[in-house]
Length: 140
Image 1 (cartoon, rainbow, N blue to C red):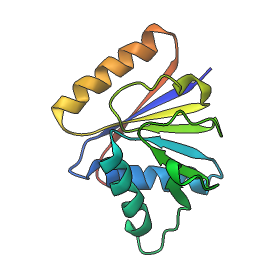
Image 2 (image 1 turned 60 degrees about the horizontal axis):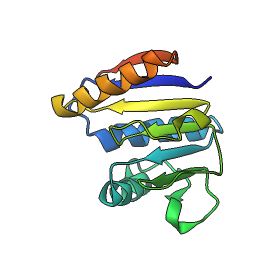
Image 3 (image 1 turned 180 degrees about the vertical axis):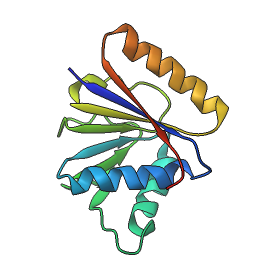
């Protein structure tokens, strides 16, 4: 059964900056990740940020629409068929395809409006019996 982790950002770190750190950690563990974003703009912004979020970091990635074979793919409107390891959800909504993944990482921004969506997602997973884990992300 899919394991679901909620990463609640408790600092002023931008959501995409935290996402880059999480994506890098997953990649360095040898896992493939699909990042599900809100929209095309967020997908493109994350794509750009992954190239430059840290000078000594390299995370091979692409937009899912590019059709390249990379360990990290980013999309807002694609049902990823090519792997089932880690789904990072930045969209605020539970994607229909989440249960195909071994793990789901729900990133919870500091803004209250997005936290209410995260609470709804938490209840969704909880009512269906998924293993839930909570991580408060504080200053490094």
